[in-house]
Length: 328
View 1 (tube, one colour):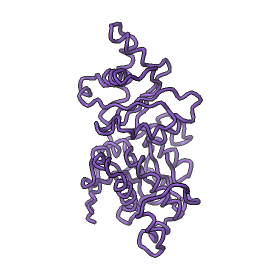
View 2 (view 1 turned 135 degrees about the vertical axis):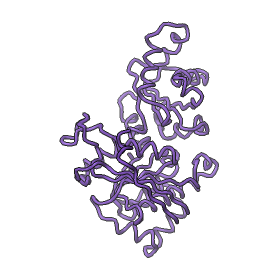
View 3 (view 1 turned 90 degrees about the vertical axis):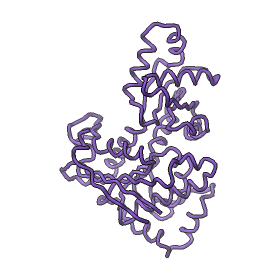
View 4 (view 1 turned 30 degrees about the vertical axis):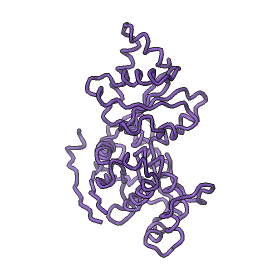
């Protein structure tokens, strides 16, 4: 495995599933690779994981996703200021949320795009576990994982959780899409969800529908309309064309090219501007509609876990960013 590091300049700054130590999950088989690790306590992977201390404060935040998404997430973490660092309230305080932390973006171009594994999901499950093990190794020394790929979350999240629980690893593992779905399921009236899919192969493939199991979910891909500011309109048209009915309460953005503020502006335009099409499309937007972004959810969910576990470094310094090119 070869690794190349590049320290990001401070100029770039200007621009949950959570695993806990406990008994291993049961009732569902994990992949052979995880079974092999758990069967041999002398193997390097088991030794590495069992050496990770609980409440680990020293180390880095590792982001695991495709190269483009990892780059966007790294910038989000470096510039994140969604909370008051004193009391944890949801209010910016002009101090980066992850002050003093080092965030590492793992780039593995060999295994991306992950949609290539839709016909071979067991391989994707193993890739997910192997990527996490690289993050825990000495080159990265992760004290938290941000597994922001929705495909990895759906197909490899269980196996990673099984491995970490079984080896007593108690570090935050943030799956933002799962965090969003869990909140929907916990709501007394979750309403309908529409997801802006990251790539065409995932829209309608059942990935998001499985992640949002128990919630009425629709996914669509709107690549050609991103630059024209008509992404929401295109998603609503696709929703209507699918034969779905009922108003959508939550618009979930898993396409990092899209801005939540732009989607909100597009929704207001459809609701407020009179036209024949708007009259039809506004019927598909619930009165309590809202927009949530997987990109921002990743940093917010990680911050909440850090605060709950008290694993911040507490250094008064700008956060640092690293990119690591990982090759098998």
